[in-house]
Image (cartoon, rainbow, N blue to C red; front, side, top):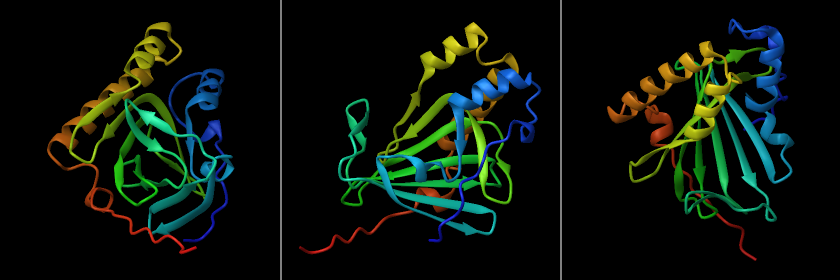
Length: 197
């Protein structure tokens, strides 16, 4: 996989029908940008590859990375490998996580706005809600309380609440019918070979 430059997020590239100040505030908290993993202290060995309109990013969690959990299930820690798939046709970003031994941990699907592409990569605005598809097929909803609070307080504008709810309904229905994530993501496996001491 080739190295790619980090994409920069520009408010003017998003046509979301909300005031610029509100958009900038949301971007500071909710932006998802290709190349951003390269800047994370606990991540190393960043790689990316373009496959036509599909951008695939890969990163390995460093040996001193803290463990992260969803519920009681570990999804990150030393040696864990994450992939991010920027699905241009679906206007969706999807992340697939693997343990340090290469075992599929699950698929994270952030509910987001349509992808924006420039010459460096993709960006989108996360809409707080997320889905996590476990290897055994169970689907969990993530950050529902935070979404409800942001919607009720107006921090997340009504127009984006509607986008999130529409996207959430589409994604959950497509997952139930096994039409999402696409086979490329669903069937993607990892063969981890560790160096011998």
